[in-house]
Image (cartoon, rainbow, N blue to C red):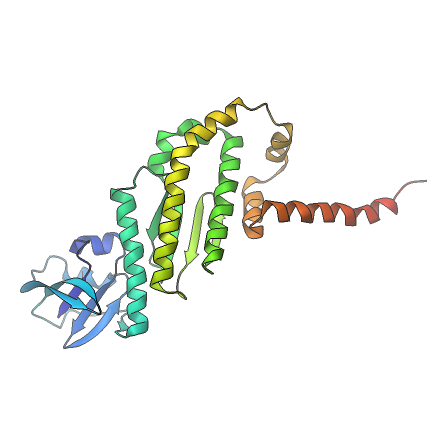
Length: 263
């Protein structure tokens, strides 16, 4: 039994970051998208450790004496299509690791998940605790979230990725029907945005506090369910389109107003 994995991870980190691995069982290779099966090997000492290249990718290899560690579940046959899935999952996991070790003070973070090929973008608790005053201001937080909502929705759309937004500052990006190069570019572009917005948030908040109080913003906050409002903006993907539709709605409602006047 041989287990192939990215040298950027320790064996334990494969589980910590849901990283993929390749299992060679009696000379036949399989892909485990999130290395769930390697829990069977924790605590065992490999008889050999070495490096090997597969399809242009460099791997650590741990070789074990037995093929009898069962059950092995949810394995994909090794082929070009599934190796593409391996590369996507591996890239998500490496990004997940870097957000923990290198980018752990940025505004948002990226994580791999156990849900096939999906990444989650969410608020980084480190950033939250370092900027509590920003998130204590409901008005600024509301504007910040709308900005992030529109940016992520439009970025995902540019790459034709399906996405969802069901909780504040939590976005799910579906990556099952795409290619490694597209995911790599998406993560790079998002990282650039994340670095820029992380630096600008304190400055933007300072500028926001110097603005005159907005009665319009206060009314929106008072009379709206904020979660529902931001989800609506996310679904639209454009604040201008949303406003245009509201104007049309007011125009259509005027029909009822004209015909409901009391004598």
